[in-house]
Image 1 (cartoon, rainbow, N blue to C red):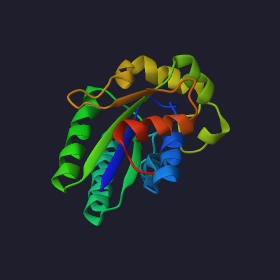
Image 2: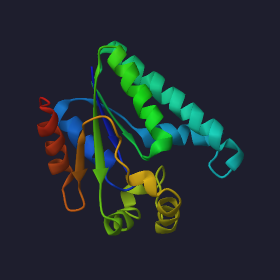
Image 3: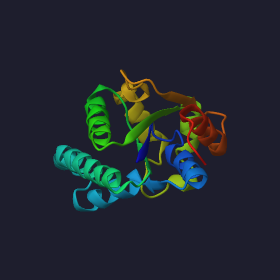
Image 4: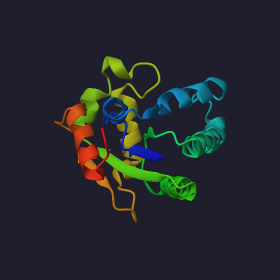
Length: 181
């Protein structure tokens, strides 16, 4: 089983690139936004008392789904909308679990300029399950500048896609990791 794990700041194009990769490879896409939205239906973001519970629950469930995909041999692409030291323990845990099940994990960091993020955040495709306002994104970036940090200790690809099409981003990933189409 191969797992392509695409991470980066909100509005960098992670899901759009993941969908292009899925078209090229036949891999399944585990949609982070849909998953988090289902949990938020029960434990709403507006209620800050649920923050830790929601975070722990999404982490455990995400890990279990991806481990089951590895056990079943289902090649998968997933996205993760944050970065930084408070998330890297999860990245390491996921890497350990997938590799322990004889799977391979391919990390990909997507980055884009702040201007591009601000332009993309209010696009129609982001309505509903994603951060979709400049104000919210500005606040998030101010509070969490580490969202742009690269996961240390694992050699992996960074794709700067400010001016890159999703298809070209997918092709960079395929080429870097020599993945079959």
